[in-house]
Length: 263
Ligand code: SAM
Image 1: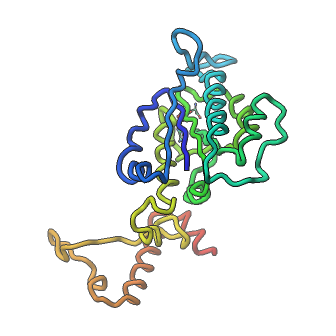
Image 2: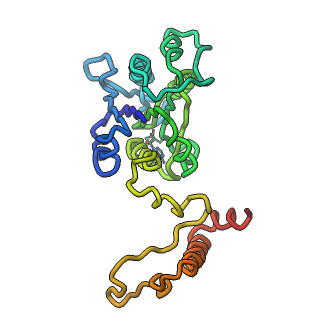
């Protein structure tokens, strides 16, 4: 998978060089490219924002630097197609714009993810779907967000997703992008050493949260591992875990519990 990140703080993404995602890059399962949005400005102050049309507080990200940065990513992708590329009916042969010839050369439109608190809620289902994508591009905003016309324009050239990571407002979309990238890339085969650990996780197929987990020592500061986990009886352990998962889901996430019991 290739991931392009466009931001006024590209160094924010240095955390992606750590741990499993860092190793996935070293193993060439993942290619991450960072772009500084200010490199696509044309004034000497490298301005990316201006006051909102119609007035009001704050600043809005100007459309032109975003379009230039996104065009550069598309042109670069077209000139260096991934060996994993497959042909698809999603190609943009209908496009008549100059960029149309670039996107026409792409067998599959890249997926552009715009993190925004006004987007659809990003869930494990999105992570599963996007883990199969070949090319993701993230456009994290700052200030009051990105001029809406970028979304309209980009929809012609990308598969577009506007995603929120939760019902709260961050200062910028970089942290949201990192969250989504962690959730997506850990599902790419080979990224996690022991893929069995993806089974029975919270927000998986069962619709339940994960049961409590323990490790050695059996006794710790007066607290004990539940006896059943030391019994060696796999059927009983599986039953105990299911009961715990149900109890935890019922207690902490009534919304998930309602869906689980309705199914
Ligand atoms: N004025 C915007 C609103 O009320 O919807 C919030 C702008 S926020 C201060 C700046 C940027 O942070 C957004 O453009 C978005 O990229 C990112 N952001 C903030 N909260 C987010 C969330 N919950 N999920 C995803 N991105 C978020």
